[in-house]
Image 1 (cartoon, rainbow, N blue to C red):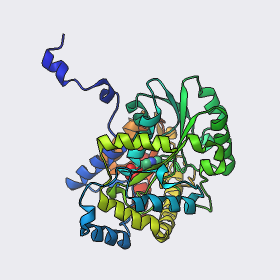
Image 2: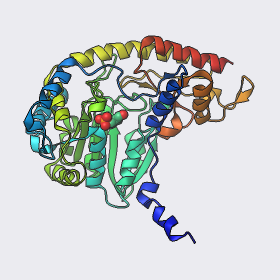
Image 3: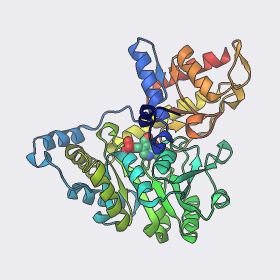
Image 4: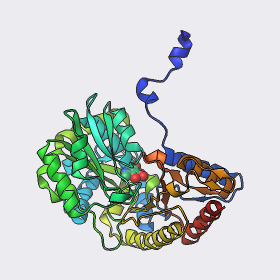
Length: 404
Ligand SMILES: Cc1ncc(COP(=O)(O)O)c(C=O)c1O
């Protein structure tokens, strides 16, 4: 029997059931090694390596001296920001909504949390394509729901089909989580694929949570259509997640939003009113300048990311046993390392990508996030949100280690 103080110290079952963010953990480890003086090239970051554009920072500086910004504001967000998000959404994806359908959140991450909290009851199942961004299943669990993985691999460009979703559907299925361009694979669904998905959602009376945070980071002339625009029939059962983090290099400002039917937005706003209240007003004013401005900053970032994507894709494919498909969006590649596992390499056998990531960090000073973190062992995620020289040097180090 545990003593009473032991049982007091036990965490709740809900918190016990989740793990820390593996992607943030890799970045933290790389940071610590760097502080100890090691030369580390990190492909772990899930954020642009650019600075927030000056006009956005200036808007925040101005907001700091506005006394109106020093106090609590409406939980759902500053009215002018909610209206600007409505205009931005129409401009960028063609989705037409009203400002009472928008809730401004502390980053898109809180929007994901709020969305599942608003729709999931205990036991509700949410279909999630694997490999997935680790927050998705954890947010479902925190809401009392049950994440159900639908697995894809490189043979389908990491995309799941409607047939696979149908096979995974049960009477308890409540929602599908969709993200295109995808973290961690960079996969982008075509308009036809989006239509098939939207129609299947409508037919089966499910919710769709669609994360559009990488909407502008697409390459080779590709576009990422918004599901409720392609299939308007789902607008009353669709929650769109978005934010300024990736488009404007604003990960530290913590501004995102969710768009959905007013009843859901009202419920999520109530939840937020008892947890975090309004998002920092100064950050909201920065986000306002971002979404009201043009897309010049993201155009510049996209061009740089595109060059790095090429270096990484080609460099990885030149390493025997590594194969990588060319992703069309976001800033990640998701190569397979299956060809090097369980083979003799410099006197040792690596048995998993978890082990590979650890050896790469310790022996080659390269941080990658193993596929285990995303529900697909044998692969790994490498972010190309780092300078071209570093990308090239990182690939060289991986090659040297794997060539033994
Ligand atoms: C798919 C996806 N959604 C949401 C987020 C979170 O964005 P934010 O920084 O706005 O919370 C991320 C961050 O990595 C992401 O990859």
